[in-house]
Length: 70
Image 1 (cartoon, rainbow, N blue to C red):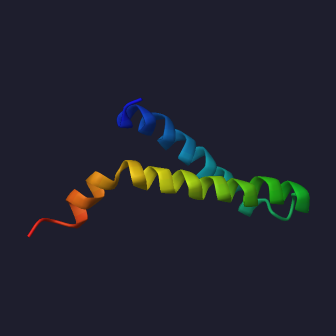
Image 2: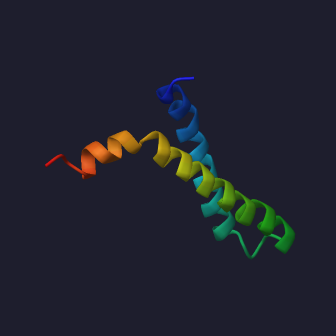
């Protein structure tokens, strides 16, 4: 699968997990500890993994934008 096709799937999934983190923080007092642990803590671990994959897939762009040739 090409990198752009993977990013077209990855970017919306990243958005969903980012929104999940925000919503669980906003409603942390209304959620049980177990539900909070599942959605926030596990979702955070998945989010960090997805961010790492996103950076890996975009590393050529990062190098070109922030580390110019001398």
